[in-house]
Length: 402
Image 1 (cartoon, rainbow, N blue to C red):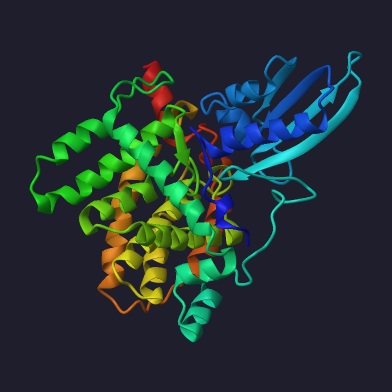
Image 2: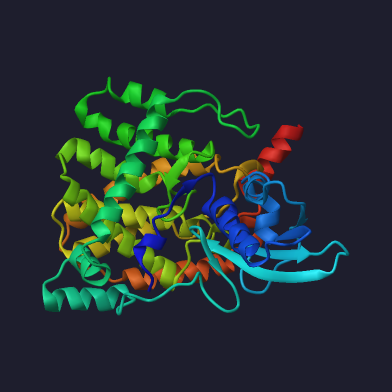
């Protein structure tokens, strides 16, 4: 299992799969074939279906600069390894092929091809929640200390930078008003939610603040702002919303937050390794569901939960998003994505509270739910996996025409 440095990636929205990864792939291919006279980039399946709404073409164009290139869209064609397939080709002045690369955007900004998986190196000897729980019970380690033993203490400098970026995007989102780009005419709501919540009595404020914080980060993502994948751009508002709320209400230290991010990263990594965090592969359950599990685990830890209670909170966060489809309206990471971040943030804290009320024992394990999530995702028709061809996206198109 790979480092959580590749789970938490700082980048620009709106999509880790559709903008961050294609940008990286373009840079890599240009470095390999810098002398092409012309370049062709073919996008397949989900990347082609929602690429324009997700700004894939603009991300590629930015990397291409003044070079001659064209983008071909083949949404009906699926390459063999993943729905988010890309084919890069470099040709000379006589249209003779110089080089090509078939590569896949597999979620969270990661790339994979037939020879390698995002140049990853395994640093975690234990790759299931059950084996990590057994280790923690025998050694007395917490989840965060297990992460530290695998990643080294230098990880905390990285996590501090991640937290600062999360807070910056959240605070910027809270302070900004206006309309989101893309043509839906969707107004930013974070500032309004925040202002209204401040007038509520304390006992009613939790959901309002969580929603405002999640909206703030998700709206920044929708505008192409700088955010942190946690585990993806589309679900980037959940973890920072929960942790920022807890820093405000519990006065958490910087080390508390860093350790919470380490535990959340471990949970996200387990889903990424044993399931999927790609909406195009398993639907939104792999994105927002995983983010909810990460946030629930982090919250349970900072509230003093045991490793068993933390695992239970994470399991509930993922379990109760099973079957969630990915059908973004107009191919934009806005409806229902932004609202889902807010609901997942409130659910994460509910999962935390419920887990703390129990001893942490339960029948369905986190590993079980991860396997079921992947199985469920593969059973969901491709129409509901980030193609904007059905569901809410289809309903909106019908209403728009009528």
